Image (cartoon, rainbow, N blue to C red; front, side, top):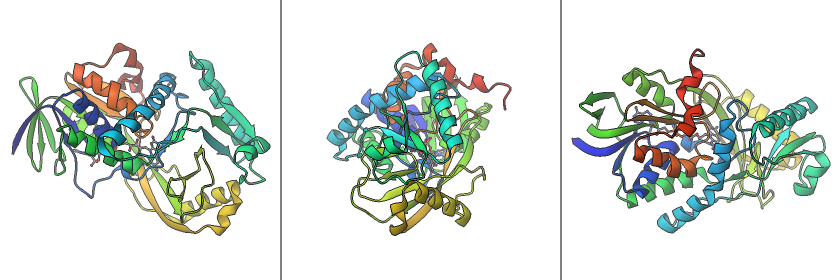
Length: 367
Ligand SMILES: Cc1cc2nc3c(=O)[nH]c(=O)nc-3n(C[C@H](O)[C@H](O)[C@H](O)COP(=O)(O)OP(=O)(O)OC[C@H]3O[C@@H](n4cnc5c(N)ncnc54)[C@H](O)[C@@H]3O)c2cc1C
């Protein structure tokens, strides 16, 4: 099979499909090349936070980008429900990050103050003690020191988001090749030729949006792309009546009543296993934060791999003329802006100068 298209988006996780959906909205013809069912996908194992707080500590430009991204989320959610009938369960009622020790609480306060100080606009956050949290979340444990609150944060259902973006993209004439793992990328004249088990795709532009697979795609193009896996283990409880109406980074209630508890941060390579020691530690933290959980049953656990750059912030870079790298750790939080502005850069064929802080050059010398 030989397929010609304007843009080949390599990777059909949240990042690739957000960009492809945005291209389709602009009537740019594209094909999404994705691997088959056994592939490693962060998009199917994440926590579903739509989050700003803390972003930008290592890369100040990321704060404003994340704030713009969450501001655009309601429009994306409304568009997806209108176009696909899928409600992605967005709520944006603020977010809480709990600290287990006084030292952790103080460090959090310093970090958010640093983010606030470097941000050129308004950046609100509050450090809440136990009594202040209790007013909003009466179930908080008596020994919890406190936590940080941000009004910008929220949550959504990440699996429905992935499904809705795929459905919306297909409805606008997009095409997904699910036997489309790229094994080679060559150039013929001013076009790219992407080889996959399902055949070749010829495209004027390509988007490298393959998550952890971007490192291999970079090798095909002779470009170093520093992404590494960081494992997160998550526990899920049985359904319980509504408890929290705000998003909490460590324990969040989904719209169907289950509680998601997470997640670890482990550098163990491409290992997707769950381990007893880590799930026990996660459960122990959760019991400290919310003692009522001792009566709630854990139903399942899983692990997924985060896609982490050296500063954990996104990368947007035209690695070769016409070849755009889009990768990040927060593909849920950034979905709306990827489906709009980022898709616009690909459609226009250039990443704006204003985004240069997000380029690969910032890692020069650190690889
Ligand atoms: C435990 C955990 C919790 C998280 N919590 C949150 C959260 O609360 N909020 C948030 O915003 N983000 C969260 N994330 C991050 C979020 O899940 C990711 O940022 C997002 O899923 C990344 O999407 P992606 O498309 O880049 O990668 P993936 O979902 O990994 O998708 C990459 C795709 O590329 C395909 N691919 C790979 N190689 C090739 C190739 N050669 N050719 C074609 N296709 C290829 C793969 O098959 C896959 O489908 C979390 C992640 C984890 C692991």
